[in-house]
Length: 171
Image (cartoon, rainbow, N blue to C red; front, side, top):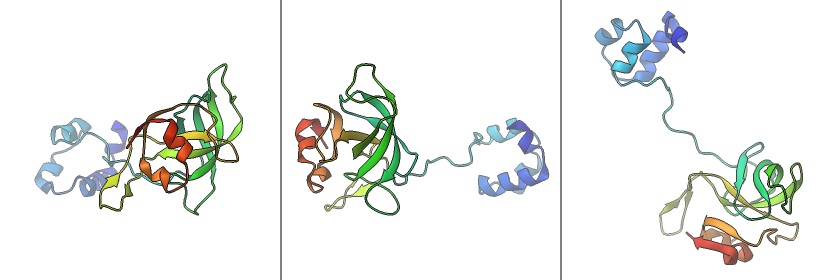
């Protein structure tokens, strides 16, 4: 990282990304530690872009089916990807030893938490810190018998009432 600030081109890029710094301050910058003295911590983008759940997205499994992490293969509804309440096809990446599902299995899942913000009818917005899924069979019934963590009430509109009854907290 320190070597990339040595060239004139990268210095011009850092000038434009740093914003309203005077040219006097930038002219005296020659070392990366001078950038940190101005409050610049080395990261160009401070906020992470929140998008749809799409192919190769890694999701946490929040039921007791035996899987810990899954990777999305395909979103079954929509061209861009899946949102809250949508069904996906996923591959189990990590599983507990004596669970109902094994590593490498292809399973169906319902997205119960998504980092992408979703607007509600009352004007509020709901978003979560992580992407999470509950594993279901082809008929839409949950594989596990418990659902951990908060689950949004938007699942009621998507006809996932069984997941809502198993949830310990409805947000």
